[in-house]
Length: 168
Image (cartoon, rainbow, N blue to C red):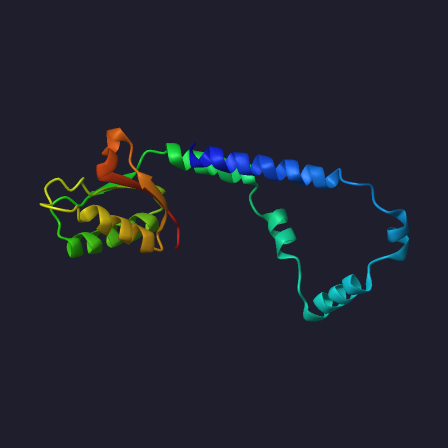
């Protein structure tokens, strides 16, 4: 199952649970006449005194909907990499520096998706080096967001795509 499908299923379950809560038992008219409990009144009073406001409610009002986030995620997934770096032949430190600089440069230029070609490590004479280096740089970079194994036509297991974050 793809991540997008998992996310859609999660959202569907959340919606159905919210609908179940809405259609739960009818409210108790006597409770409405009594008003909020003393504990609820004390909590409201404390929240008002401290100036605490409902951030979740604000976020829901101004933030993007789950559907628009999924749509944007699908758009980025289908986007072809706009720039690529090939780390073949570099040592670990040179690759680390080149990739960090590449990610920052591309993000500052407003690119959204890039390709990092690190190779499969068949010429490393042992354990692949550049794949681990590339993953480490991408995971720690403030410019990198989601990433994954490139499609077969872009290098498969010898490359990774990276969605960039804009941090101007």
